[in-house]
Amino acid sequence: MKYPPAPLRTIGISGWSIFNGERVKKADGFYWITEAEATAHWDSWLAEFHDAHFKQCLAWGEVKRAEGWQVMRASFWKNGIPTALAQITLRKAGAFPASIAWANGGPVVLRKSASAPENSFEEFLTVLRTRLKNEVGRYFLRVGVMRPDSVEAASALRAAGFAPAPIPLSTRLTCVVGLDAELDEIRKRLDKKWRNQLKASEKSNPSFVAGVDDEIFQKFDRLHRQMTRLKGLGAEDSSLETLRRHAAAFGDRFEIILAEIEGEPGSGACVYRYDDKAFLGLAATNTTGRKACLANALYWNLFGRLKRQGVRTFDLMGVDPQRAWGVYHFKRGTRGEMTTRVGEWDCASGPIMFAASNLAIWLRFGNRG
Image (tube, rainbow, N blue to C red):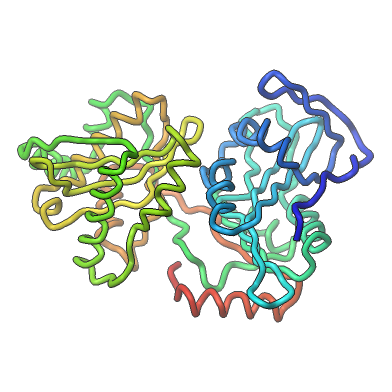
């Protein structure tokens, strides 16, 4: 399958949008975004949405492309501005004449501007399904919508032919820490037990290192392996190759941060930044880190570090009180806002494709949601 060409302009109301000093003109309607347009404008467009997510930005698309996925970017325009965006990664379904597509972290639809035209989520989703089928034929599409859960959003998805994912790969509940307040105020808001653990960790006088050099990669990989063995997760690992791809694609918007005692890491995390948001990636704490409460010290250091970098919200990326009570309790202790998102919904070109794709997901991943 080739990357879809730019479509002919649809007839409708036209307007001008200015991004990065350049003007982009599109009539009302649906558009596939070309590579040249995406390189010049995609991240600027994305930054205009409240529900923008780092897995919808240009760098994430390049990460997935390096892993063998194709990348398509869809948009919906009204009155000269994009009112919905979706970056979709897709690949062939093995030997079958069908495609598996995944809009991780999208579509995004909640514009920041109060004067933005009212967007029809349902209309965009409906047209997206039709246009995707025209481009690739048989398909299975999963979206991972990051906007807060609502009856309206669920109704729009159902009306457009989507259904809640039977085998979700992530939880819909997350914890978002606001960083607008002064650090003293943020510390006062911490749960009492969390704050006491932070005080205990500070007695160990931990040091913090951040970056993406080879030594830090190696230390984090070793730390993550120690944690997976501690939790009995077997062969699961952090994949140095994957992390290096992320670092190459995101540049200075990706970092690994380690909390160490006498040069030995006890806790660490990967962090992605996009616009004024930060997102937690892989994180790990070993036995030494647990005893010294180094995860508390690490997160507290991150709050200050991200705040200095201009970050306003830090998404701790998923909490699950059913399957990971300890992680849920720890993240909840930061007193971040607990938010339930719309989450993962599926559609397909037919019922057999829908069932077969979810069976394949279950066989590979089990039920993680």
